[in-house]
Image (cartoon, rainbow, N blue to C red; front, side):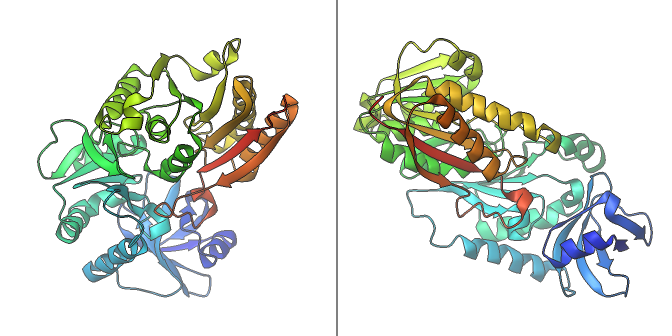
Length: 399
């Protein structure tokens, strides 16, 4: 299938952008089918890119190769996988058995994510364009990585089509038997569980690993509030780091139960076993908006994405500022605020600006410790991929 696209799309492809949107396609040699290869030519019939066509998505083409033609065959896929694996070689030792092996477009596998949880692999698809090739890709992963099991997870927007047209379901086992329960893996020597069949994302938020390590290093002797705690990753790290106490604030009873299990998995660590843990089931904005009746020395804010689409960006920026302002009222002098965002539609500059405004408007002198972005197993090589950011600020002790 041959495509011709707008001048703006041609420029974007030449600059390495991995997407072509439906409205940018000006001409197609024929109606395309989801999953087939489509080639983009410029107005002088020169090759621009080849990618996977998705007839049902606003992102109509996801680029596999650009600049010069390449045969997309079995050896090409194998080499592309090796490149992703090599990129992570040496990043983790035996104390970490949970991490990302393929990060979508950023590793040349557009719309496809592969996460490792010990001997279990989770393959998540964000476009139906991969479904016709699922057997081929699964066989390659099984042969090269030898997992105990391979699980398929599907983005919500493609589940209905996947079932109706390709007989694929979210949580489907592509290889191996079903787990007896949540899969347990190691992260920095801590045992954590991942709900690989029904949990959010692929079962755990692996992308926050480096920020969790940062919290561990800051936690000693501090009273910690883990807001939007989910399954308690930040809390377990804080406990091992010597926190005086940990409070988990989370609306989901299911998530709080998982957090309790993650603490129990690490009771052989003396610091975790001796750290008092309080679970508060409440909506975080509402709870923080109440009158601050106690103080915390370290507060982690890690809400779910507050902007699911571009139009929600301005409202999300206001919400992030409000959330930081509410949390600051609970922070003791000398306390540290760690605020995170996973909203791709809010830039790092916008998010950091919102938190900085909240700190400035609080009237409490503070210093900025650092800002962070993506961990090395979650590279971000184009603007829309840069979703994760965090900022750490410490109040002065004078007030």
